[in-house]
Image 1 (cartoon, helix red, strand yellow):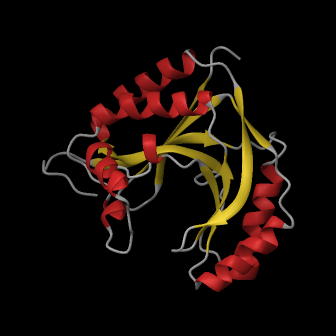
Image 2 (cartoon, helix red, strand yellow):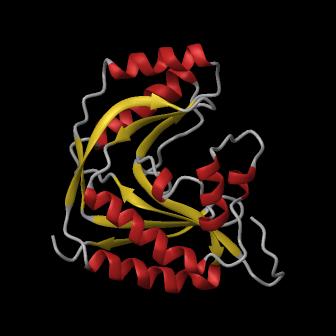
Length: 218
């Protein structure tokens, strides 16, 4: 993480919806991830503290001093939403190794993501999420424009909601095989969204803070 201001400490934030242990699909997500770790050497591992199954809505690096403002914005957004459900689609993968369960976009999810991005980006400062500038990542022109403007290539018109379940660095044929095997087992239908989760990592990637914002209209 870098900043043009020497005295500005940048942190990475992830804003999304965690799948909680009382959600019907929680156990299956955990098992799918465990299978990928044990059978296919996935380096993406779920953790009850720092990396729970989650639907990511927006992540980027921001000045640490701006966290208080971002939290205030997220609380206001949560206060204006009523719980809704998101249906899951199929299992798929990105060519660089991410394996995920796709989520269908509905009006509520689209509006939630839009409000989160719009209210958070104003606090981005001069921080930058270096991973999104790695040369091995390939983007469309729209994604490049979003990366420049929002610090993240996967937002708004290029938002593709999903829940990552593994990262296996292998060839295309192997990824296709893995996904096919998961499709035969996966039975998760939907996710109930009734909160926003914020996680904060330092420059070493360590979790330093997390907070949940419950929807007021439940």
